[in-house]
Length: 383
Image 1 (cartoon, rainbow, N blue to C red):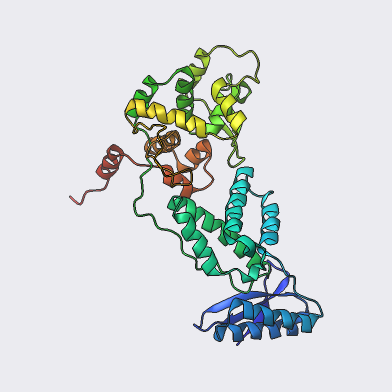
Image 2: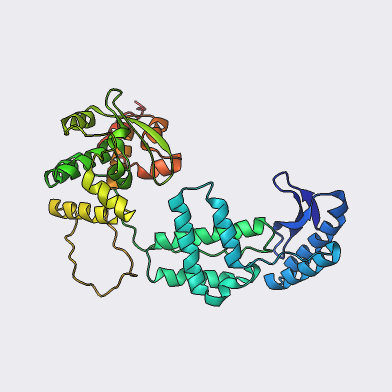
């Protein structure tokens, strides 16, 4: 039997009921948790249960609930379009996630709007699971599975938020499945021999950036933006605010990196970039694509990546991007792996590299065969 209860995380009565499969469901009634509203909320809860057991469509349920809400409160339930809800949702995210993350959220939603056309201005409760899955399938023809799934995840966040705000009866994205990749390219760290080979083919500036990548574990964009004011030569440390997450880091300089910095010409001012050419590129373009291509060319000269040309493949700009097992970001994986194999505690390694969670950190760690053999040899013997 349907019932209502108070949730400490919300100010509204929550309806508890079971659907046609017997599964317990909870939905907000949209009514404030006061004794006066309790009976009205119970009426809505019973309607939820009736709708769930009779498998009514989300549109049918919403029309009934709207009618009930008007009858019980004398007010119309708010009608919010998908586009308007997304605008409000993005605005709320600006204070809790990095600017680049908000840009990605916005881009994913804009693609969904473009796919829906006029339907993007429908009431959010009228968007269907079929439309979300059709959008997913359309993206899958042009983008890598991981990228497609990131877009689906954004939509799930949008609709989950709408449901939490009682704008939806059922979340149409809840059971929309992600895309599975048939062939996963393993992203791996560099071996030290590979790093040495890469350095042979680097000019002075790229050599410096590779050393920074290996010894600090930071991203290409942040390394390109480093200025001398970020470095404290006396304390042998470098400080930064990461561009992706806004995380403040203060990283000790390993001896090899400190010696490298000492060998560089003295800066005219602290505002001078450590890597002038890269700084100019990333500042002008606001992204690292051009620098990544430059490093890809270095890997090709080293024999660690296939040589690419500017000759057209006929696939167009919207085709799936070709990914490679090694990239500049692999140096970040190398740092995590070498720290792990050296026995550095996970919490310390995470703090140095700037990983926010153990789950993310573990993805970056690739344990080598030698370390695994060493670990295996330490298992106790039964003899």
